[in-house]
Amino acid sequence: MASNRLIPLRISNKKAYVWDIDGETKGPHTTTHSRPSDIATLRSYHRLCGVLTGTLPHLSQQNVFLGVPLLLMPEEVVLLVEKGR
Image (cartoon, one colour):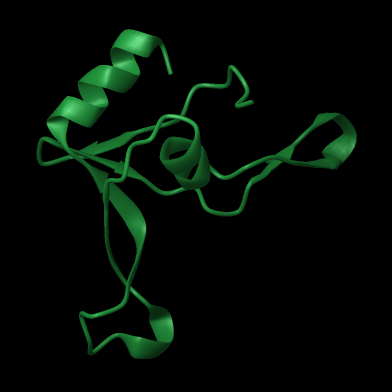
């Protein structure tokens, strides 16, 4: 089950992006706690797909395989806000 932690959305040009892929948070005394990444949580728990829009560092001249950020549709953002996520 997903945690009650809010998923941070970055808004740019009226579009919402999700950037977290590492699944780690810093806790007290600089310990690291593992958790599912925000993108994995959106896809598995909330059943939201979004669209990966970034390029991969080692394949920057192609557009077949894409990486972070994950772009959300306005309807997906509204659903997350209504659920309090």
